[in-house]
Length: 193
Image 1 (cartoon, rainbow, N blue to C red):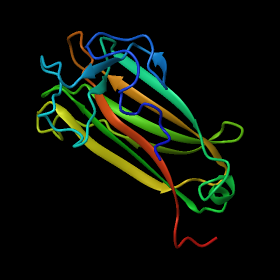
Image 2 (image 1 turned 90 degrees about the horizontal axis):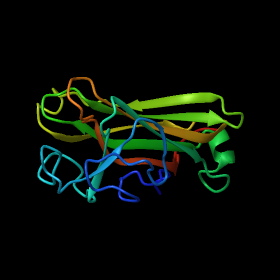
Image 3 (image 1 turned 30 degrees about the vertical axis):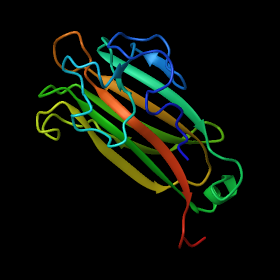
């Protein structure tokens, strides 16, 4: 089960390149994101461009702000095979993945970080995905999948998910793009305790 709420930009206002003030499930901490429809065209990624095979109708964009940041604090399950006792025994793995990209040969980009925190809010581990460079996209508009995973650090109780979309060049459009953001937990097998 994906612990990230609205990691696919499908819920709430949007559908155009116009920035929105709120994003379902996320706290906008900087800038103003846009939730752009794949059917919009005009240089934005379309269903024909590189991206998730099972994409929905929209993706995250940085809007018109030089830097846009969206934040989500996720509580880890308290019980079960991925609950606190299993985490503390080193028996829970996490996987974080996202489709990140940009426009043509521009270096505008998206970075996703997941910071695990203990019960006092102290960071205990960090995973960072992206940004995907124009060279990695071969100068094409689109999104490429990035993923990471490891054991959830003992003591972790929450995960802070931060999406940062950055404009690096000129122009008014922040063409950092993201879609399909996911954080999942699984019971680790073959792990000694």
